[in-house]
Every structure is written in structure tokens, then in C-alpha cells.
Amino acid sequence: MFGYLQKIGKALMVPVAVLPAAAILMGIGYWIDPTGWGGNSQIAAFLIKAGAALIDNMAILFAIGVAYGLSKDKNGAAALAGLVAFQVVTTLLSIGAVAQMTGTPVEEISPAFGKINNQFVGILCGVISGELYNRFSNIELPKFLAFFSGKRFVPILTSVVMIFVSFILLYVWPVIYTVLVSFGTSVAKMGAIGAGLYGFLNRLLIPVGLHHALNSVFWFNVAGINDIGRFWGNPTLAYADLPSVLEGTYHVGMYQAGFFPIMMFGLLGACLAFIQTSKNENKSKITSIMIAAGFASFFTGVTEPVEFAFMFVAPALYVIHAILTGIAVFLAASFNWMAGFGFSAGLVDFVLSLQNPNANKPYMLIILGLVFFVIYYLVFTFAIKVFDLKTPGREESDEEIITAKNENVSHSRLASTLIPLLGGFENIEEIDYCTTRLRLRVKESANVDEIEIKKLVPGILKPSKNAVQVIVGTEVEFVAEEMKRLLGK
Image (cartoon, rainbow, N blue to C red; front, side, top):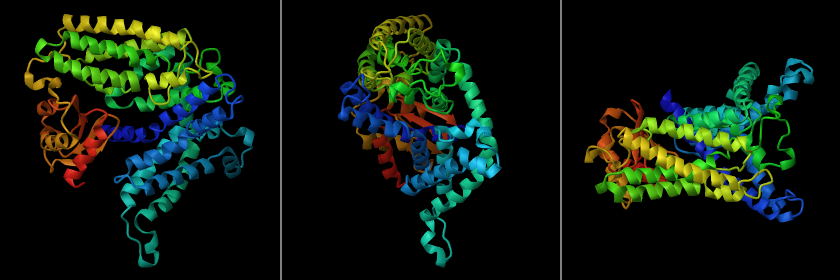
């Protein structure tokens, strides 16, 4: 079950990857016309509307992207099935359709059906479509129906299956919707404290990859919060249709802004602490690795290369990191210092959001970030020295030194070296990847040589008997493709 949730988390990165495009388009538009929302510039209006075309349709992108991401061979037929599934469900469960099918007056229909076009339903449609594709894409029909065999059969089957799914959701979705709204609003109505709690849980769930589920409640429109959509949308509608319990406690961007001080500055302080506290013989290696990891965090907001360097060797330190993140999100929300992102809280998204009308005193996030740089450096340095934590460069055995990684190893060489360390060709059943990790399904994770793999890459995780994650870095796609080529899979 854990491995499957990880697989879904990886598939979610396919649609999420389009958010930077929306942020760039809308960010440039707001730079051109920061006060008129395109009303004073046709070029700005064009760019903003182009970005909104992505942000406003994230639900359908999730249905298509997740189906594609879960498909065994990344085929377009799976993506088409995801689109079919989403269209069937959202059409059959629209307020008008539900009223007609149940014979109930429109005004008495549950408001849940007015929110059926959301990311949660999109993910559900994508998961079902992806699994139908994997199971039935090779089916052979009788000769007189041969044209519809194989991959062509999947969208047709999906349309039928989703009719039954829609019938189930007719009764289940109002309950799910109520639970999601209750959870989101129970935290969100706490105002800045709730934002801080969300920031803490966001980081705490990263090791298991379940932070995506939490993010969908606050960043998207599952519970009516839709923080990213509101920040990048029309500023005159930023607080439209806001759940009543959030009125007076919610500021657009409050579930995004506090991450900028951490990703752009706080983790840089952690990197400096790792460098300063490493053994002298490892300092040069640690410095090169931490500079690369820190730059990725600062510039793009991709934090995994830094976080995976210590979350398992010093879990107490990672909990401190989660707490500090919660504090940063709480402070930004308390003082209403707002900025937003389309992908992650790095420099690129920060610059693009500066002229967004929904941004408020974003420069204060820089000051807050400098404070957190110092806090991270002092707290991490103190904890590492006092408790003798085995952070990068402080391991007892040279065989366990994470920094023995050779950054100059080619993708093909790294792939060919990893395969035998993962138990060989016969032990590897499936190869996939997300932003920075190889996600592998193996016959037996006990056959994986962790010590030798840690010499090559920043880290390794075994979430279950048949699942292995190898933390490679942002070049993971090339390594994965090379491994697939070598394995002939």
C-alpha cells in the first residue's frame, strides 16, 4: 500500500510540472501591468489569461497527467482515458444532472456537486484510468471488433467504468467533500496558527511522499481554499466564494509565502552548518555537494537534495527543520507578508510574483529569510556538535560517507554501476522517477547494497520489502532512462 501511494505521488508530479509555465506567464503579465490585471495592457492580459488557462484547469490536468504517469509505458491512450473519465464524472455529477437524475430541486442539491470539478476528483479519475490502461491495454477482441483491441479499448472501457464510479460518488462524494472541507477549514480557521501547522506537516510528510495529499487541500480547490489559484487569479476575485468560516482569518498566499524564507535561505544555513561541522578530510567534498544542493533549493525551491542528506541520518534534526518551517509560515501569515509560487518557493517564483497584485510586502520575506539563515546555521551547528549527530561528513566509517559521491560520473556509468548494487537485472522489476528520486520496484530490497549505493548518490530509502528509492538529484531522468535501456525494460 505504501509503495502504491508513493507511485501515485510520483504520478502527481506530471501535472504539477506545468505550474511553472503558468507562473512565468502570469508573473510576466503582472510585471507589465501590476495594477490593472491586464486592463491597461493587451499583452499583459494575454499572458495572464494564458497562465490562468493552466491554473483554472488543474483538475482536468490532474486526471490526464496522473493517468499518463501511472501507465506502464507512458502511452497517450492512458492520458485520453483520463480525460474521458473526468468528463464522464463531472458531467454526470454536475448540479443540473444530479437534480434531473434524483428528481430533486436544484436549490436542494448538495453544494458538493458544485465543486465536483476539483483536483481530488481529477486524481481519482487519473488513478482509475491508469490502472485500467495497465490491465487492459493488451486485450484482444474478436476479429469483427479487432479495430478496438489493445490501447483503443481502454478509453471505451473507461467511459463505462466511470458511469458506475459516478453512481458510487453520487452518494460518497458529499461525505468525502464534507470531511475534506472540515479538515481544511478546521486548520485554516485557526488563521496564522493553522498556516504554521500546515507548514510543519508539509515538511514532516515529505519522507513518505504524502505531502501532496495535504497540499491539495490548501493549495488547490478541494476544500474551497485554493491558495495558489487565488494568488495567481484575478485579484478582484481573490476572496470570492471563500468558505464563511475563513472570512477574517485568511489572506491570499498565506499557505505559500512562509516557504520562501526556508527554501531560499534557511536550508542554506543548514548547508553551511553541514560544511562547518564536517570532518576536515571530508570538508571539500561536503562543500561541493552542499553548494550544488543549496543552489537548487535557493534558485528553484527543490529541497530534496538537502533534506534527504540528513532526514534519515539525523531525524531529530529533520523534525527541527519541520518546526522551523511551521514557524516561518506562521510569521509570514501573521504579518501578512505575501508572495506565491507556481512550482516551489525558489528565487524564480519569488521574482515572478513580485508584481502580482495579491503580493504584499514580499521584500519582508527576504529579511525573514536572512533571519532564518542565521537561525538554521546556529541551531543546526549547536545540535550537531552537542548531540554528535552523524550528518554529512561526520560518519564513523568511510564506507558510509555520503559525500564519496563523484559528481563527475556520467549518467550511463552511474546507471550501469547502480544496477548490480540494486541486486542485478533479476532483482529489478520496475524503474520510475520523480523530481529527484529513482523509484524502483524490486523483488527483494534486502538484496540492495545500501552502503555502496551511498557512495554514489546522496541517499537511499527502503519504504517496503519491494520498494526502493534512490536519491539521485535533478539529473534523475537521464539516469532512469539509461537504466531502462540497459535493462531492456
